[in-house]
Image (tube, rainbow, N blue to C red; front, side, top):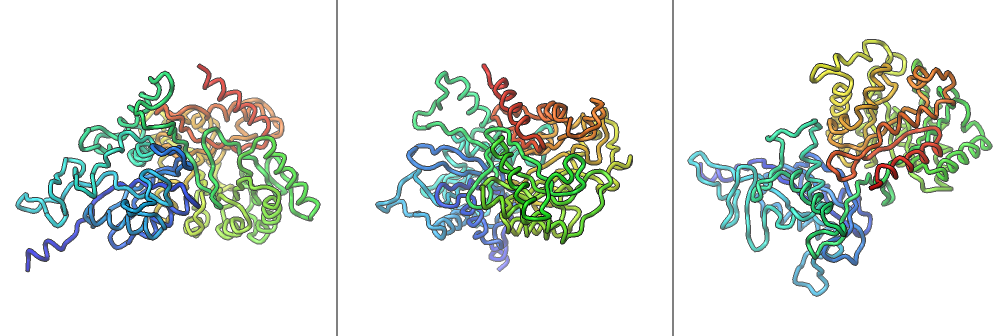
Length: 528
């Protein structure tokens, strides 16, 4: 009886699953598939970022949306495989490899593959618990299971040749947001004894060394992975270039354009909408609509007034254009109403701290969220107690370390609330609870800050702000576009891993000027 009970006791073990889809609503397929996994035996710990990739092996098919998830499970590898196949079948995928219409490496509604699995548990006498093993010929390494049967091979036999698998695994390896990856944080391939970062680096180096830019493997086509953020209605934000976000404040008191746009009557709504459409023509990839000023010292706006300001504009823009729209709000009820009216992204300058329902609200809608760093509120954020980040010369102190730590805390809270990492964007909050030196340090240290935050997509919003006026002597915010361009370009650069993944969004008033500057700057950076 004792032995039977001991065998029935399950241990939670970590595993990594690759996820992908190239049919139908790609992100919804992935999200639905993960929701169908039994929560009693499988816990989703965290997600990678998402990427669009060209297909491998069978190239005459649509692009894939790919990512990876880290889970804990009480299931054995074989039981986990059965659960993944059950979900694939429930989602409509043909999992019968012997059927006539089955195409290996062909299109699929969803693809769920076990990449790595924790080593076997060991009983007190040192023997392997066979209840956790399931297979003859399996054995464990110090970091992961090595297993080979007719139906399942761990680690996945082709993972080391697939950038679209390795890049998401590197995301998970770096997910804690440190400037360096310690040995105990690395995810190790148990056969090759190399980390995910090392394996990805080998692929990228092979591409750079190949004169024709093609993969060394003959069967592999161009599979360059491009980071994306999924949006409603099967759309994505594509980070193959820096994205310009146009600011559209429908407020009477914003520091730069207060009163310029409003929704007081239909005529003014039309004027505001035409301004948004002009921003799109000028190169904006997102329109950010806000109904509450958060300038230093600003008063709170009543919920009903904020709704009255933003909803008519969002609805009217959506009648004319499918451009992504973000709602700039600290209030969950405004966020929900705006998304229902046609917005796609929630942009919260408080990072979800102003309204205790914000994170759960965004999670329930399944949309991306921008979480900005701020201490205090618009009335108190510039007090010296909120702009003091310690000594920049001491390890673990200074504005970059402080902002990174506090941003990652918000990201973890968002994950706990149900907003996966692949739907998160962060903003260091230029001008919010920062003094002049703090703002400049964050702009100069943009790449370090990005690494400290696990290479999350970053939004920077220095447009026309007071620190530019202090440096230039320009009192009129509308005349600070030249300084804005310099501040923004300081944040636009290649990522350190050579994969071109410095995902950046620049929030500005003058879209045309910023778009032109970015196009020229990036062309210069890409020149040989």
